[in-house]
Length: 352
Length: 245
Picture (cartoon, each protein chain N blue to C red):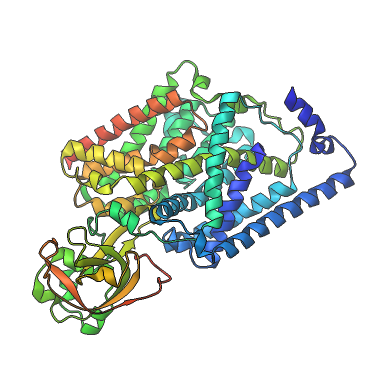
């Protein structure tokens, strides 16, 4: 009720419903000015405060901030790319096109979906808005999960960087690709057995998926795109910030040596690698470079576990996924993926 | 306001990113190879921010949140806002010895192409040795503790000061972080320096330039068998590229 009242009072609502065009034009330019002034003000504040050494924080707090900012700055381009692709899928690609080109058989369909990442080389943080877009467009929950899990691993950038780091040694590259594919499809199949797919999603996102296709009320595509940008960034960015803060805090509090000392035992090293992947929250496109220095101390299967588990489950990703899936779903997902990733690692350890 | 929090956060990050890139400080947070990509996407983000101020949608599709969701999202918003203020207001900084203490010095191996190998060092000239970085020396020290390899070689390195935990009285490290992707994966490397009572003239996190030569480490508590015996230690400005790659 209150929100209706607010809507009535919101001058924009009136403008949208056919008030004189000139007035709404003026208002548009006024808001444009507000935006530009705001951006300029931020630049000015940033430039001035950079000189004030009095604003620096003491050692550990400063490092915590530096680490958190580093996660945010590193993920942000991928998040923007993901939102742009999500807008493209939802607003600009014809409705039926994506659905038509995919096979009908559910197993083949999920297998095909696993390879979408080949054409959309976004790392995992960008995949969340894209997967949301695909669900709004008609993907089932289990299909979008398959995409979400497979795309960060089966994509050209990840494959190239992993190859650069490890070559064909010890089956690490093959283990990663095959492991990622198998886990994504197993998870997709598992969740497709769930009788009520909507109950896997947060209420808010499920409602968004149910909004009828023509909810734009005749807005131009540009207006829809911008609206989508505002909505997606409102959901994704706070989650990214919180994920980054959590990752930064743990990084500046927990000695990494604790993990590394668990070293070379076949089972413990796999667990240590999963904890490391969970904590470090580094992008799938570059995690191979990150883990390379550990290759001499850890067994190859443990490296594969890191490379398969990390892109799917880590602190930052759970915060991002929480925008879309219920806690219950995420707990199940984490448990199953952890078991499967450990299994893949054990198999590689045994074979290699 | 709720509906604009994403755009506000995006603006903060994008502005900060562009400013850092302009002042050549983006490398405090990410590896140089990502700078171009990051700046391009930041520009795209900026275009969307401006466009969303210009094309404000006339309808509000957001459902009114429940009370529980509201509390949660207010907490989240407050936390994100605090970080956003930090991004804009706190001067950018490199990682310090506080993080170094969390990550053991010279603990992890290096990937191919990083640092030096003993084989290469055999044919290196003195002039080249003088240009060796902390990373080069620490990678050699990891591979070999053969004193003959280091004797008589000129050393000239720049890094920040961190104490040797085993003998903080007499030993410090000239340290640097090496980065493979972003500051999150920074790993400390360092050259051990034997300098009794160094704390009287130097402070932890000071940037220093140390010249001298390697010799057997006189310290009894330290685990390092070889240490740099300084001819001269001068405090210097933090270099423009504080990390090594």
